[in-house]
Structure formats: structure tokens, C-alpha cells
Length: 160
Image 1 (cartoon, helix red, strand yellow):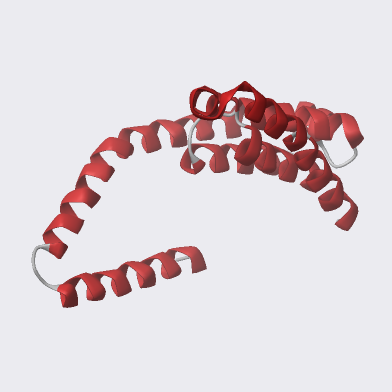
Image 2 (tube, rainbow, N blue to C red):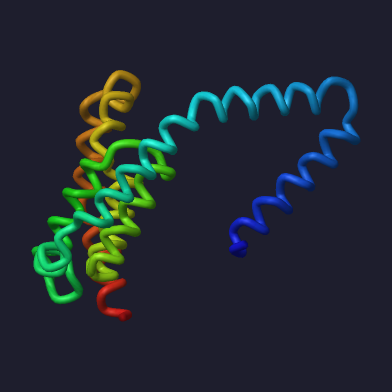
């Protein structure tokens, strides 16, 4: 069992105690919501892990090392930023995929750039951002945000 797993179990136990002490139907509501969330996401998780398994076995290690490896430089960081922007899905899909790239030889800088780009520049978010915030806001945020993954990746690469 990993530290993350133990930590999650501890948080769940604490929340269970808090819900139990609150009384009423808090425990039942919590269990119902947990079950609904599990039903909604289980298939997605299984499919994501299947994809990660295939990518892990089929990933061309030399290609990964060449394009986003530790010695790929600024070109690797820019490519990593683009990869991060294009990654669909939540963390349960994205992080296993990024871990596979890292295991296949991606450098620390590009991995940090991919992760930062996905978190700040994912292209899917613009479909929600535009209707609520407008073009001006979206362009300013995206323009400023393009530099963040590159600098984060460059700093990570420098520290290693």
C-alpha cells in the first residue's frame, strides 16, 4: 500500500466519523453519492487504464527520448506544452498517460511542461471559458498562460 492510498483511507475515515457524528441521513446521502460517482466513472477508469497499458507496451521509447527526452531542449518543452494542451480528460486519465511517457524516457522538464500545460491550457476548457468569460479574457489568459508551462519545464530541467 502506498502513502497516497493510506492518506486517502485516513481522509475517508475522518470524513466518515464526521458524517456519522452529524447524524441524520448524512451517511446514507454520502454513500449514495459515492456509489453514483463510482458507477459514472468506473468504465472510464477501466478504459483509461487499458489505454495506458497499451501505450506503455507500444510506446516507442526512442521516439519519446528523441522528442521529449531529457536532452530535447526547448523544442521538447514546446512539444510537451502542445501535448499537454491536447490531452483530454481528468487526472485519472491524464496522469497515468504522463507517467507512461516518463517511464518511456521523457525528461523531467517536458513532463512538468505537459502536466502544467494540461492543468492551465487544456483546449477543452476554452469551450466553457468563451461563453462565460468572452474572447478578450480568454485570449489574455491564454496568451499569458502559454509561457507558464515552458518556464516551469525549463526550471525543472535546470534543477535536475
